[in-house]
Image 1 (tube, rainbow, N blue to C red):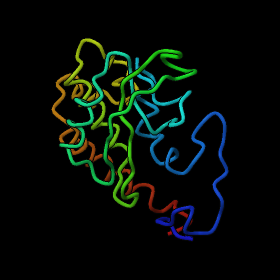
Image 2 (image 1 turned 180 degrees about the horizontal axis):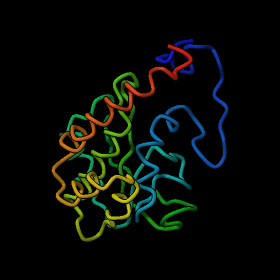
Image 3 (image 1 turned 180 degrees about the vertical axis):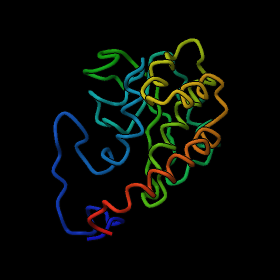
Image 4 (image 1 turned 135 degrees about the vertical axis):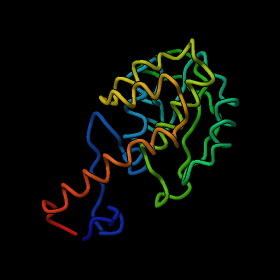
Length: 178
């Protein structure tokens, strides 16, 4: 085992936990979607795509999918798809939304996926989407202020780099496995 190994590469089975992701793809996408689930969005809970779909009754699925696909998010594509959650946000309501389709797991950066979705929804639905609830999930004042301006995911992610570099330097002596 090494730090870059994926579960399926080391021959260990995935053990789903409840409540939570029930497959490896959902587990990969969970960090991107869980903060969005704190808002007035369904993140697929109560559908066959928990943590693999984002939707709401007020969303235009084609418009969102087209915008996100134009962003060319590494490792992922977006497909328009309507669903009717049986539980969770918007239970028993028809919702338009987007499937998150993993095309290359090695290229996905989950925080970036979440930022791309959030920034797109902020741009398309500034009144309908309660983005401030998402913004507060970052627990980082500079990020929350940046999300108010909505400069885009690349700029927000770039602002994190000095802190991430310092964190990596600081944690290095404590890593047990390389």
